[in-house]
Length: 387
Image (cartoon, rainbow, N blue to C red):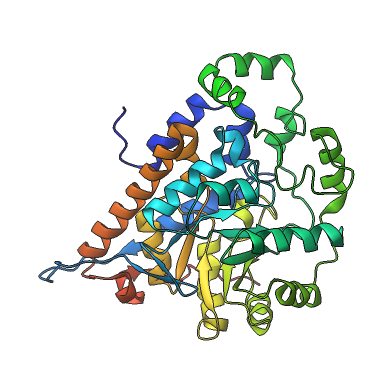
């Protein structure tokens, strides 16, 4: 087994072991990918303050996210097509998260269904919802999440209209995939991945095929999804979904203070500062750059989490020091999954935990609950002077 010391090690293995169209689906953004890049590079501008002569015994990264105990303030973000990065990928990631003690969030656009994941796990997981035009499907999938014992609903707000991702178009990523000569040649070199996929029955979108009207195969699914993302989603619909769900609600995709204030007024349990990993509005500011303004707007009214750009435990520390109560990782755990399956997701969590724990200690803190603005040095113009 190769020596894994950071997420980039897993990323290299992921690229080597997974078909290009699925690796690129993970490691890409929309349009020019400016926001995708700045989500990570903006973390580099923030520095840490080293402290010494502090008793560092008895450290703990344990805390809570929306009232749930977590081993560290990191949740696995919802990622579509996770089950194509590795056979039964959502199940493997959920099992790794459960054993580690952090939340797993299942995407509406997952390969393994809600029921599949519930059958293979013991603890409740979170379910992420895309709002579709089909009201019957919407009601049914919320009920399915309730029946599966999901402990929170993560409602994504920033994908009413799909952003264009050039790599996906060039790779022919669709349902079913376009099997061009280049795609077939690439698949032929990923024989381990192929054997695993042949060995599973889960190769379609398990939450949709057989559950949405007239969707019973990949071809009909592609047509259905192209028409179903609801561009009419507004605060009124969000209130209705909150009432329909009746449990803990997290609103994901908030990037402006005005929207954060509106989200807090819904009575949700948390908001997630996120630009969808740079996969929607290219040219938007990074999540970490927008966090301070959102904390100023609603930090004492609702729990704030941060998503997009986190690739290390130091990134987690910086987000917490700047006010976030929790964080989400997407690509970081997908790199682990694509590299080594469930073991790789565990390794990704171990890497982030170790980096968080050691960095926290060197900053003179014994608990993530004690992380505050004094831990970091932020450029004076970090939030920018925008006209």
